[in-house]
Length: 123
Image 1 (cartoon, helix red, strand yellow):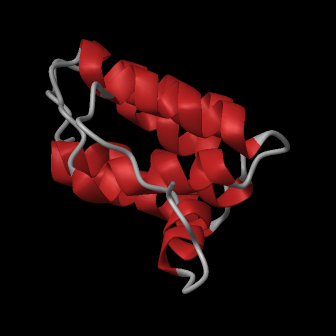
Image 2 (cartoon, one colour; image 1 turned 180 degrees about the horizontal axis):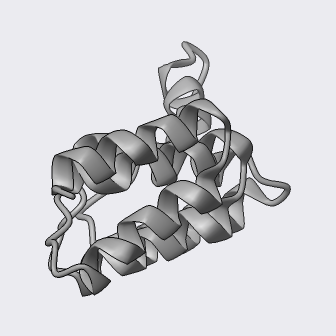
């Protein structure tokens, strides 16, 4: 089987809501001597992020990195969005920022709203 065929199989697993199966298919690629591509990880990452299983989503990301695959904007956005909707959003966003940073600045919506308020005094 080719990478494309196995990725299609992983997409079928995603359509059934089975992130574990999609991830197992990617893991099998290596055993079969097939190099996964960024698109190969999409179904598992999407399934876990959409279901709120952030730990599994970060496990997929770790596997990607170990395989030499760098997540791009869409994958990082999925991980960040999934992290935000957890029970402790601040901690998870902070954890994500520490892992993917450093950043020169981080602006959150609450402070933007406060700063743009007409009656705000910075003194």
